[in-house]
Amino acid sequence: MSCALALAVALMLADPAVAEAAAQPPMDPAAPVSVAHEPLFADLAARSGALKAVVDGWIASGEADRAGFFAGAAFGAFKDQAADLARRDLQGHLALKERGTDNDLKCILRGISEDIPVKIAALEAAPDAAERKLALDELAYLLNDNVEVITSPPRPAA
Image 1 (spheres, rainbow, N blue to C red):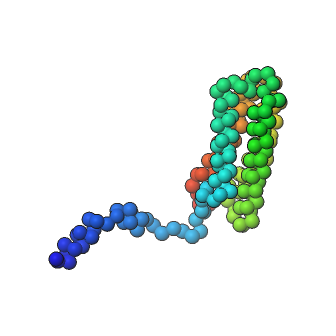
Image 2: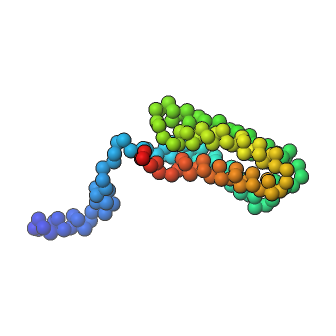
Image 3: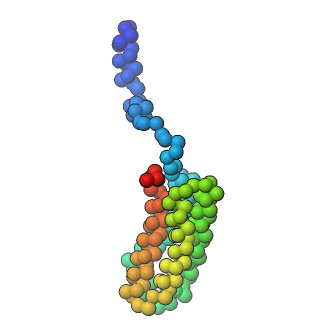
């Protein structure tokens, strides 16, 4: 068998993903690295996503407008889970701070940890259905933001 024929067969049987990977430019070691795969941050995204689903359910059903909603077990459990998420977001902030990272995620996690209790309090204090809807929308947005800042690919500093 000639060398040209052997090379042609080898190329036909080769995995194209290997060639694609080889064609990629080398990674810059100074480029920011995603933390979404790390257990702490994956847990934050999962917890926040689950709480957002609860809030979305309340928005769709109007549950928060029912009498006794805030005294109920469902809201009490949600409030406890949201407070736990806020504490864990602060842990994420502190973990990134310990690493010496100087990126937006570190600051955003701290801000979210401070904003969650504020949004819960605004929901509880809302005097009417329109204000509760606004408070729920803002809480859903914050919880979604918590997921997206963790799962979005990091961008290099400008």
